[in-house]
Structure formats: C-alpha cells, structure tokens
Amino acid sequence: MFVLGPNRYGKAETRVVRVTKHGDAHHIKDLNVSTALSGDMADVHLSGDNAAVLATDTQKNTVFAFAKKHGIGAAEDFALLLARHFVDSQPTIHRARVAIDEYGWDRRGGHSFARNGRETRTCVVHYDGERSWVVSGLKDLVLLNTTDSEFWGFVRDEYTTLNETRDRVLATAVTATWRHAGVSDWDKSYEKAREALLTAFADTYSLSLQQTLYAMGSRVLTDCPEIVEVRLALPNKHHFLVDLSPFGLDNDGEVFFAADRPYGLIEGTVLREGAPGAGPAWE
Ligand SMILES: O=c1[nH]c(=O)c2[nH]c(=O)[nH]c2[nH]1
Image (cartoon, rainbow, N blue to C red; front, side):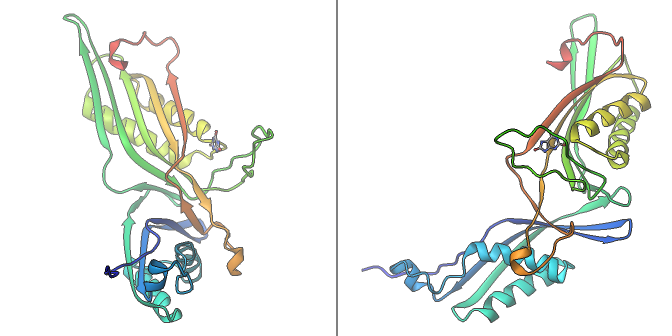
C-alpha cells in the first residue's frame, strides 16, 4: 500500500513585465513569478479527477491579469495579492506559495533602462613575437526600451503570422567586441565604448534591431577614434503583449510576457572605411 505524501503544483517562472507610463516617463517592473498551490489534491493524483484543480495555465493568466488590474508595487505585495486570491477564491485550495525574483533596472532616460549588475568586460590578445592585436569587448549588457521601437514592412510569405507593430518593447543582451588600431588607454577606451553603446541604444528611434545594431556600432566608432571595427551580437529578447481581452481587460502596452527562447539573434559588424585588416585576435 502507498499513500500520497505532501504535494503542490503551479506555474513556475511566469516572466511578467509591467510598464507604467506617466507621459514620457516610463517605469518598469520585471518579475519572475512562480506559484504553487496545495489543497484537496488526492483525487487528481489517485484517479485523475481534475475537479479540484485550478489549472496552472489559469495561475499564469492570473499573474498577467493582476499585473494589469492592480499594477505591481513591491513584489511582496504582489505575491500576497496572488496568494490570497488563490486560497480565498477556491474552496479546494488551502495553501499558496508565491515566489518572486525581481530584476532591477537602472534608468538610462525616459524610456530606456539597463539591467542592474554590471556586464562582463572581455578581451582577447594575440602576440606573434613581433606584433600584438587587442580585441576588447563586453557581454551580458542587458538593455530595454519601453517605446521608440517599431517593426513593420517585412516580408510576408505563407508562413508569416507576425503582426506589424508601431510600438513595441525592444530589449537585448549586448555582446560586443571591438578591435583597436594600436595601443590605447584600455580602461578609458572601454568606458567610452560602453557609454556609446548605451546612449546609441537609448536614443535611436528603432525600426528594427538591425538598424539599432548599426547605430550602436557607428556610435562606438564615432566616439572612439582608437577603435577600427565593432562586432555586435544582439539577441532580440522578445516581449509579447499579453492578450488580456478574455478577462475583459485592455492592454495598451502595459503588460508583457518576457519570452526567453527562441529569440531572434541579430549579428553584424561596423567597420571604419579603409580600416587596417583584422589580425588573429578575432579568432
Ligand atoms: O528588429 C527585428 N528584426 C527582425 O529581423 C525581426 N524578426 C522578427 O520576427 N522580429 C524582428 N525584429
């Protein structure tokens, strides 16, 4: 004989981004919400009778709907709101566990943000006994614009379902490498290049991430004469507007599902015209 021991079930890692707009000043809350419920769950385990089960899909929808209806202040308040809702509204649910990870963002303008925690600075150096080559760079610089991004006019074939958009969230995690012409003040050069990437991302009105990529690379070359070539890899960290209409709620660019995969990956190089050829440091 066996007996059912402790159990719980829920939706893990609902990635909700809530944007609040006060004119041109935008605010974001970026959460990873995991819900787990327990209660009268013997039947579903022992016989597959789902009558007591609040579907995990419903739990996820509740996270998005509450983000719209109540906004998101302190994560603790949002977690309490959800936990009380599940237990108080469902007679079969007796206990709720809501765990939230919150990602912090530093403001870089009215609608532009950089995820807090510094990126990783990188370099690759080659030396062949005579010459040296230095490629500097960074990775995991996470940036997000809550507006000033459109994507439309792309090819439509028989497999295209993507809607055109005139206003979307644009987010990426920058991997950038740049090639120095010679010996530079590496630290100073790094700070200038980093700042160029950040400001170009923030102030480029984007019609595609490809266009933003070129603007970011160009800005580095403009601001850093010691650099001759920039390579960028920009994952398009998709933020999908959640359809809240089944719950009688509109969603005017306020609640997004931050998908982690698959993601678009936009890669490109911006070169100074007539730049000396690349050495082995790129490899
Ligand atoms: O900026 C973008 N560039 C694309 O090539 C692309 N493709 C896509 O589905 N979304 C986007 N966004």
